[in-house]
Image (tube, rainbow, N blue to C red):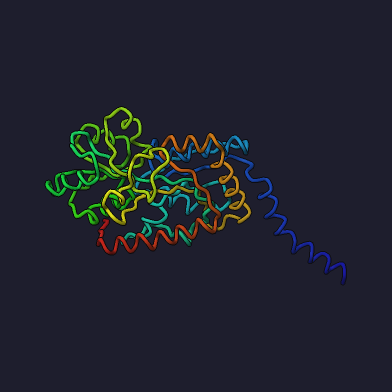
Length: 323
């Protein structure tokens, strides 16, 4: 009888040991980090910096996989359906995990059902960029021009319903102006058209426009964060420039498929928090107009949930329709 009980006890422990072994050895092969937008954007830059550091620390290659399309849904869905073993991860953003979930037409994934958030790694305030042909030197002056020319000022976004689109839609509503939206698939062509004057303005991350700002080919009027950005301390926020209540900020974080062992998720979160605290990583982020941040898996999940609810309210008030 005692022998049978002993065998049963050992058998009961086998599943626990089987789970612990792969966690202890994680990672033992390359990891795919999916970026659901084009190369060159802020999300891609963050993924490559983080991926490089993870590769150095773990000795296993982090493969950056840009799977763009459908406002980030293609890449996000790919990860949602991947094996929950920690070897396929999503470099997510406020667009894929919060805004898309808030739209009337839901994406083919659910942020609670399909994902296990690990940690936020960065945030990037959106800034109001204009072509220098517009004489505005402040947000207030830009609003005056937009009111005098309703519907004539064109802006680009990374897609209908994305963060860069909603940033402009909310600005129009709060500032009482009417502008025209032109969605793009990637940042490269969009910036080229802004530089050529085909687009008059845009709400985009500072990282995309920094080289052109330094060269004087673009002008930045205000920033969408609630506080001034350390990289540009003289740049006022859009809220303090007269558009009360305005806020437009991207965040980026690493997410695994639902069902990934919690020990792997926690190990990944701890590693990411350590990486974004490294001095050279912080400096590289700030040079790109990106602020390093970190969070626990639980805090990251709570942020996503809060954002989904907030954007759902905004979209309902604006009656935004996305085909």
